[in-house]
Image (spheres, one colour):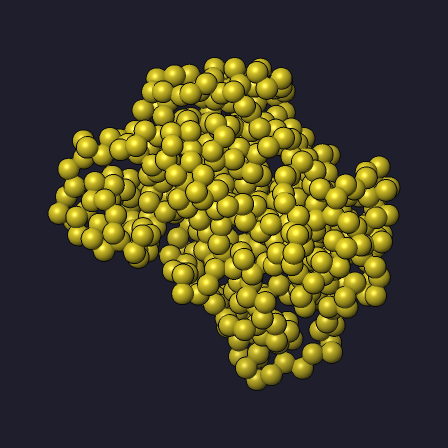
Length: 246
Length: 246
């Protein structure tokens, strides 16, 4: 492993529905004085992809169901917001005042099913991209490098948020060290690193949340481009039968 | 935020009990051709700190209790290993064949209470450092920079392991963006990034698990050195009353 570099991409134009995110990132990359190599990885927040894909809901356009109104009372949130969250939800995992943790239709377990009111006009919310792997694939094709679409998730047991991968293209989700031996000759039986999530977490530091820096360029991570087919984020989602914390 | 660089530190001498980890890291840093600035952060795996601090147990020296033997049957592990794990444990969080998830006396929730048989002579295991914040503080003093002691943890809901911070000195555990506004003027109400964990995760990629590269140098992360007192890892541990997944 050589030096890993995580470089914030500044000056990305403001994204509105229908815009080409790849082109906007290219503008930012050029304006930041960077160039992209095919061994590079662009990490990009889902927020601008959701906006470009029109994954935006105006709360004034939402009529909450009786069920959403009931839940909204329990968690003390806007019933229209809860209605939007429930539409994005396959399963409510936990619920408490101010917190609704959901499994999205994609299989991500996160607060509010990824519905978010930051970095968008007041009164509107963004949804996660419909198929973040597809979004990543389109971007990877356009930019000619690896792509990780990220979102900012809470964790269990630990305070503070961490960016995680929700869509990938060309980038391996996991770095499998099983079968290798450590320097003592012991085999490393359970060491499979979640490399896409580690890269996403690091990129989250470079992106910031307030600076209009919605992406980061990662150089120096050695990965094998997928030759046939592509990786998918599902490799990072634990099967329910192997999860002790559903 | 400028470019974040994560540089593996090679050629760190093999650590044995009683050795000065700071001196060994300095040797590696020099041999790798690097220099340390006080604004840099060294991320170091707990493994070499545990070894230096003599946190090693030979399984042949362990007599398992009747309780440990009972648990060992259930999870199909060596009863002596279970005995060591239970001694490090404040509370067993979940248990299933091949998996024991424990809360350690420090308050970390992780597999096997951090007891690990990799990168150590066969028949011996390492324990976590007794006080990883203190270990980090001593190293930070010696090296004159920030320090994060890391361990490799599994996650809930997601496959793959991620390095996390278990001890810190001078480095802030969290990057608090609350009260700031996004580019739309919305306040970012819940955006507190777990920066120490994000840095640990990235450093884990640079360290690898098999290459004898037990540390990484992080350059370009902007942090405010603690003026009075120091940060502690407890800031990253969620209080039980706020945790929905105990």
